[in-house]
Image (cartoon, rainbow, N blue to C red; front, top):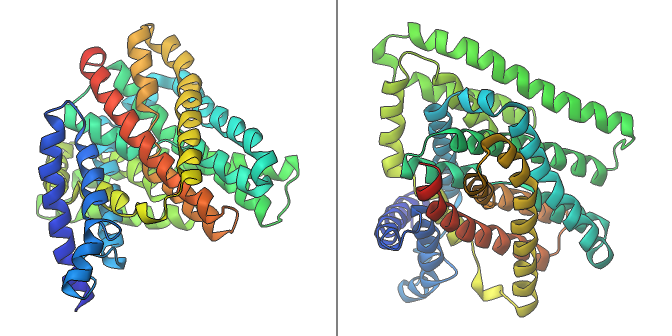
Length: 390
């Protein structure tokens, strides 16, 4: 069978099942992305899809490169829409406390996991396990905020902290890879690397926020459907080539376009695309879960990682959220919103496996940890957000 046609069929089935399950879970006050994750876990090639493949005699349900491509498009679009909706205001308003909260929320679980697993799994594995612990899923946060149409100081702090958290974890990942590759790891060289990553990110953000809306305001309306996408993926290509993730570049592009007088029209375009492709990334994440290889040891490791990720992310974020919001319940809700590891944890786990720093069992433990924290954190955040962030 033509792999492109198969991918188109699979995508249509994935999206349909995601919408059905999302409608069901929303009746129980769970976020849509839980239904999307469950859809992937049910229909994926390691679950019901495997039975269907055996029945028809060829890989009818499969996660090939075309589906990965569309899933990447989905998550970039989701983060772009989040940046477009909130603009630069969250980063400005949360200020130093937002930055400190994001930094603490990434570093605290990193160091706890590193020192806890160093004696058991070795130096390399402990580094990657710690880095996966530090991540936050901006996609999960953005999905719930968009679904609930949340606004206010708490949402501003959360969006800002989640975006900065990605940068902090990127710096952690960069340092870890430098150590594994045997490049210079002196305090001076690592300090220079960290300073460079932060400085370049700030310069790109500042230039984008000033330049992109000015150009967009002068573009003819007949090019308004194509121009934002060209800028979005052009900026993504540029930033990825510098070592940043596509998540960070998508957020920067969205924040920049939010300053344009044509931002409302651009939102309509992005929302139209999200209405079709929005669920695909989380379905893809769920479809990658292989229950056939799940052992008791892996399950116990994933539960342990989940507990560490949950508790120490909360502890890292909560004090700074409380100092900013001056409201215990709102600060608790924001801290819960930072718990999901989602796509960022999965990317770090994949890199750890490719560098042979993580064993297959450790990799699966991180995958399930990312899944569990996304399910639990998203569900709790939605319940509390409806009461304390609206």
